[in-house]
Length: 156
Image 1 (tube, rainbow, N blue to C red):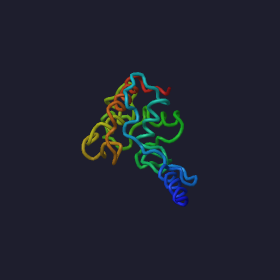
Image 2: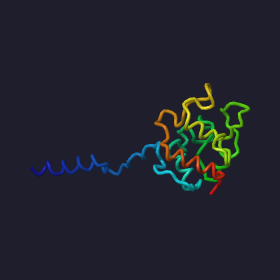
Image 3: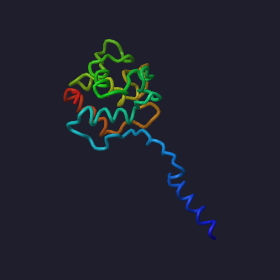
Image 4: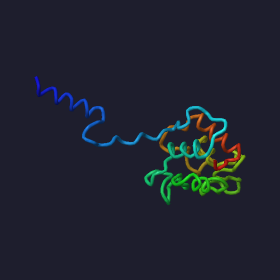
């Protein structure tokens, strides 16, 4: 009966992710990074982590690295990402419609909100709802993003 005890301990250890010093895989991206809407969100503490957690920032994600397939990268410091978003003209939006990736104070002309709330953003031919291939962003996250844009999309 003694040989069974070490085997049982080993299988319990491996089943709980403690086997042999290997690290557990990173947690999966979520489509509800902000489960409760925030009325006064900040970019660095709320918006950037939500974008990185649901849309990616690593070089292998749609919105990571120097040449992201998603047209805008969420990788880098808060100041770098903010500069790429606020007041920037999107690469894949209908021309002449007044779109900006983020138009401070104007959620209705902020392409990022169009992309996360519409199945056919901008009408046919401008891609699909984001995050692509994942469930839609939860409403509290969308509401928080909208509140940040409405308040001026500050880099705080």
